[in-house]
Image 1 (cartoon, helix red, strand yellow):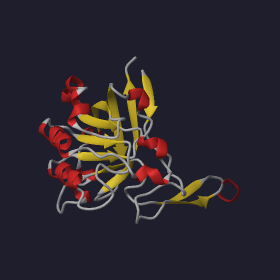
Image 2: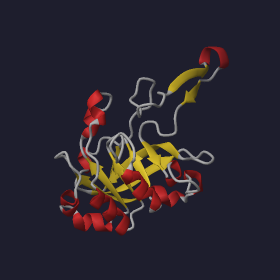
Image 3: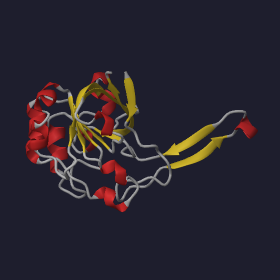
Length: 208
């Protein structure tokens, strides 16, 4: 068994969605003064590797803290999408695996540009791919990019997925070793009240 960390480190200089504030990590307590260390964290709910829930954009929709924890884990098909597009052609190349999975994760390789301006210029799933995920009853989709939509409104993929009750995990990383494989996927969000989204510690477990 091999465990792969799919999560970006949170720090003050990290890349964030345009228009949101970067996180701030400040000293709360110190060993010298208090005998223990604590850090004060300020961050938006969609910072770094994070999960979107339908309540992110839909009035009265499910919030993360109300969802069963089983929503956040399951078998995932990691679909190679390294050619700059995410179409049914890529999904069909892994179709047997994708049909059986609870999650579909798109490996675009875009995480190699994390922290650089080019990171935002990323491929997004075509509508047919999103509809496939909905029609096959997936729990959610994941991607190693900032968003499953272009970086402006109207965010059609988000709304399609949210209206189907699905979650979205964005800003994954380190998918290379899992690409083209079925993995056990865990993306456990912070549990805070009325959560519209939250950072996750996402991992993939490979069976050896």
